[in-house]
Length: 369
Image 1 (cartoon, rainbow, N blue to C red):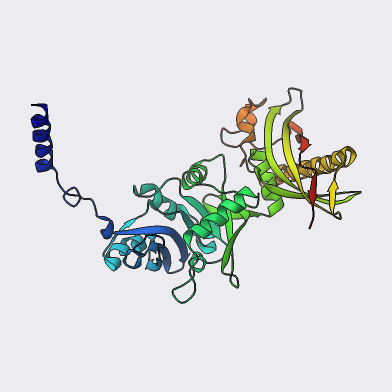
Image 2 (cartoon, one colour):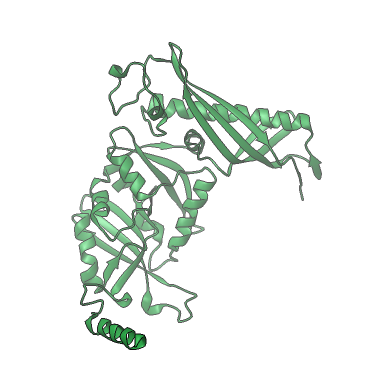
């Protein structure tokens, strides 16, 4: 009897079920699966470049997934996106996009309209990565005539640059949140293309005010920015001692922030760093002794303190930014001097910023070939 009831229920479900089309959905063959998005702007409007999966030419084994490049123009970004379905006969699927690239012209003009589209488009992934390019975004995907750089390769360049301290990656929802906040500026990595090698690297970091790209860091300032946020990992730092040049890899950096309670308040940051020696000048196998390890650790400590102080000076004093949100933890002594959205360092902070770095050097020997 139970089996009969179960079969009857299943039969009723099948009778009352409807297909994807009846529900307004789409089969996979009706979709344009977008892997990457590039956005450029000029006096004529927007140029939208898409790298999408070419389902018609996909390897039956599933081992290869060829892509195709599509370009659309529009007076507004909405017009450019709106032309996709009519030109391809497919409904665009944005949720598979690995990243969004904005060309320099679009980033310097302002990202208000493009960001508005992605905030309103329910199909877009909020955690998709965002980056800017030092030229037109359309150039970073290659062309139909030249070899196309796969979206995963560009994504890996961003991951690698972030892991090695060369740039600060950020997902779209964080970028939008920072862009809309009155108390902060947004940031994202900058991509650079090697035309000869047809490769992409991630270097330096772009900072935005009011949605416009206004400031750019070099790699040293980017390392300082990541240190201030406690996010520097796998970055390499070269120091010099009496025994030669040593290159170390920062494995971990933990920060602790406090505000001194005296009359001349100061921000005090303690950073604990663990690093490995990965390269140094020597012949054959050479194991560092205790005295040499201490000298290397002292040199690294001095260099990191210098990097931190330069970063603090640039972001908080020169650029008047609170990108690392150091002040959010403290109750200010004279709140009437500060708006609720502007944590500028004023005369309350005598020396502004003091940092203490403690270094642990682990790996101390290697055999050079």
